Length: 255
Image (cartoon, rainbow, N blue to C red; front, side, top):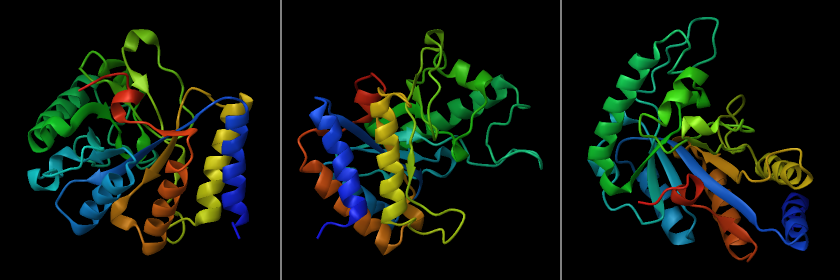
């Protein structure tokens, strides 16, 4: 018997299909840097399932061996520069606080991008996923001119002005219970987040053109998280009206 939460998720996908629309998803995982069996497991899951993965890597800690032999389904994107919290005591965590000069932040990002490019080679795309999903608008406005294709944070996106030369595509479903167990948030919560975002897009309460993004953190996955992802990918890959999008498709560029 299909659990109620899985049925609700599938019913929402069917509503899109009945409306003649495909459901678009994408997958981002944060905090890659060094070779690790868990990172290898993550990339192998992308390869075996055929689900494209945007692997957000920390440049300051990036080691070339971590990116050797990546399956074609994996694209490396930039997770800040050093993932160091520069927020004041009264601010939420961020690598890029508003007090920091844009030129200083851009120099750090450029150095990190060069290091990550050397480590990941052709697997890398110039897309920024800032640590803690926070970047101040003045810096975001300068990313396009600095050579970035896109920006990805968390939550409903605010479409960036055309003159920024930047595409923003966010994530919306976080499968980790950061405020509780710091393990898998559970099927009910994860599928509920996805179902609600899909419904909001379908009903016009959220940007219908923004694919629903799944956010994972491989380093803290428990077995329940791995099992959920395998089940999610198997189910959705069997539905013709579901599309998992690549970084190149999302951000409008090709390698």
